[in-house]
Length: 195
Image 1 (cartoon, helix red, strand yellow):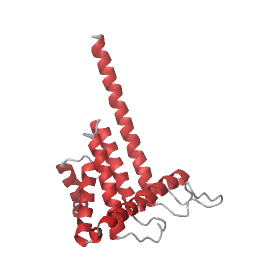
Image 2 (image 1 turned 90 degrees about the vertical axis):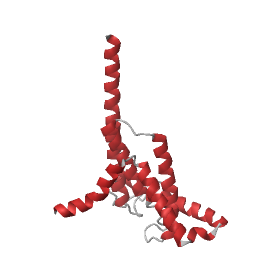
Image 3 (image 1 turned 60 degrees about the horizontal axis):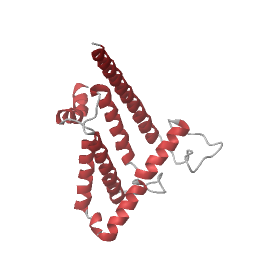
Image 4 (image 1 turned 30 degrees about the vertical axis):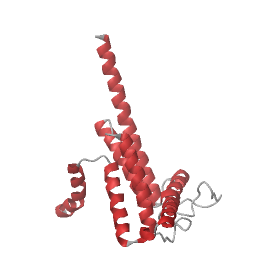
């Protein structure tokens, strides 16, 4: 009897902790996304810290630093990364688990690599991300190393394939069922219809 009560207590505590971690992940991902959207190159970061400069970033100094690190490293793909974290938090909160978590992390790694490479080849020029462009240094490194072996990386069809792979691995990383994905895709349409 005592052991059953102990198991129930442990299960209860475990479930509440997972829900709490899910909420924290949702909040953190929302903070990261808001920081990326409000990013300004003139804001302070790890390298550049002006004393009297007003911080424009929504997240203040910490938001500016996190956004700068993500944007300079993986570029605009960091937006997809924050969305992935949000869905992981949502899964933890609602289901108490993320199915095949190590596989989701692997898919995330793949879409970050393919996505940043795609952006570097497709459109890397940026008026506000002058150091590494829209792809960050990850996209730059991968594109340059692949280019050493083959120039096919700049072929239009190859670029489309890389873009599709990015989208595919991003969807896999979210741990969504097909029915849930269809609902998300139809959501803007349904909103417009209701309006």
